[in-house]
Length: 275
Ligand SMILES: *[C@@H]1O[C@H](CO)[C@@H](O)[C@H](O)[C@H]1NC(C)=O
Image (cartoon, rainbow, N blue to C red; front, side, top):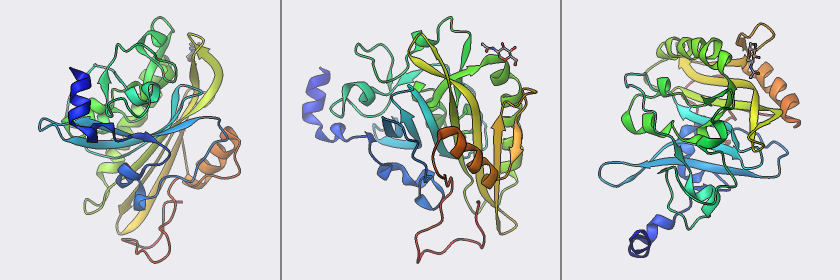
């Protein structure tokens, strides 16, 4: 039955897991993804999408995923004020394992050859939480809410940290970004620094979580960085510049620009930038 649908609807074989974010650039400031390529063997660019009620494909955020670590490196999204409850169904991304002929967009779990990504059973009894990068609290519509529940948007996170300081931080970010100028969008990139531990001998555990936000306040760019846990199990606020320096060390790369400027010739909505 499913095969028949593929044959009849060739557009279904469009690739959402690929080498770039061309289908989902709007989730990045200026439509430019972070300049940020960890020296990793294998990464996948995922334009996270879901099907809406009219069977249209809706892009909801972007994830750079490490198929080596089997966790995301970052998820990038446009902040929305929360007004929606939580959904606990977890999805996987078919194309990471089945290739581009698999149906794009998220599917319920329960497939056979799962090599390149984490699955629910990896987390069972591990003692770690599935820590979201794009948290459901930062969504403001049903489709985005559902879409945060994919395992490609989660990494094993210390449960004390996940349910404590990181959760408090995510609430504080809501308050902060609600103060941004509503005429512009508020952009968020949330990422994971890997530890050298794995759960189920497969999925790399997170050592640190980080977040960078960028919006317009009083007609100037306002950029903020966050990184944790520190030695006191807290989240440290820091400038985007300092966050980038920290991450360059963590990921062993020369430099990282989380919110790159526009290509020459494009106008910003205000002077300044988030770096
Ligand atoms: C999680 O963090 C707490 C507080 O720092 C620590 O006591 C606990 O051992 C950690 N859990 C794991 C699984 O590392």
